[in-house]
Amino acid sequence: MHLQEILFSQGFGTRRICLGLVQQGLVTVGGVPVTDPFAEFEPEGLAFTVEGQAWAYHAKAYLMLHKPAGYECSQKPGAWPSIYTLLPGPLRQRPVKGGQPGVQAIGRLDQDTTGLLLLSDDGAFIHRMGSPKRHVPKVYQVGTADAVDERQVKRLLEGVVLEDDPRAVRAAACVRTGEKALELTLTEGKYHQVKRMLAAVGNRVERLHRSRIGDLELPADLRPGEWRWLGQADLAACQAQRKLPV
Ligand code: URA
Image 1 (cartoon, rainbow, N blue to C red):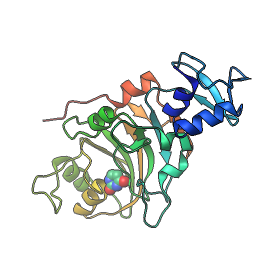
Image 2: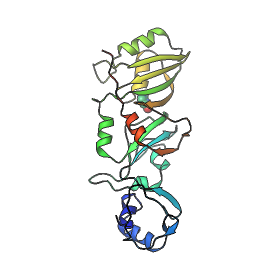
Image 3: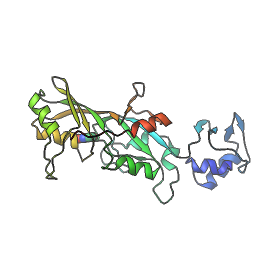
Image 4: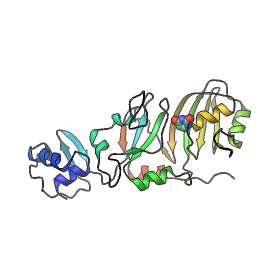
């Protein structure tokens, strides 16, 4: 693959901009500047720098972000900054055939919710992970305003009715982890679902953190605002499904 095409595929700008970056000697491969935009490289596993920024070629982008509080999961946020500003420019500009450029968040977390968020530019993966039919469990650590009692836990497990749907929604698992704390596992993703479920049982969410998707845990060393590429094992883990209790 031509170096110019590699840069273009990774989101370093239009083909013309990528051509200029190479011709100006701003791209190095193996520590050596390459000034021929049509120099051929095997893209898989290629590491290079662009204007001093180290980059590794990825045919498709799969990432996790530790979403901090105070960010919106929207490209055009209202009152708060967008999570997309936490990502380097190339990830936001990667060309996507027939779609919006750049990686997209898979599902949304509220502005005040923290924790594990997946992003990708692979439309099929985004669709699969977001599909309500797949029942990928998502685990939330919930801090509540009032003490959690056994009756609330029982109701969350048995199912509560939210105002926009007559069918009850229930937690796949619910464990009291403190006087005012719960670990709640959901296999669907309705709007504000955790907050509305807690409100339906007479409590209120004060803190909400997503700690796991499928079998993929938010790594302890990934700090709020930081992101990283998903490896093969992470990709398999986040797609792990569970049989729902009947
Ligand atoms: N449920 C909520 O209420 N908010 C989130 O951000 C995620 C799940």
